[in-house]
Length: 52
Image (cartoon, rainbow, N blue to C red):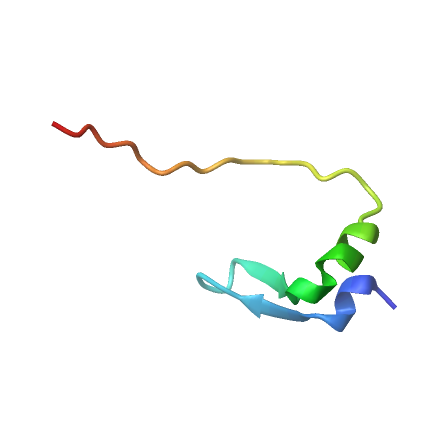
C-alpha cells in the first residue's frame, strides 16, 4: 500500500491541480515517509507595489 493512499486527494483551482489532504497530526509521519529528494520546479511571489 502506498503511504499517500490513506489520504484524500482533492482537486483545487480546476482539474489540473491536485493535492493530498494530510491532517496536521500526520505531518510528522508524512515527513518520515519521504524517501527521495524534493525538487522545486517553480516559485511564485506576490506582485510588488510601490506605495507613494
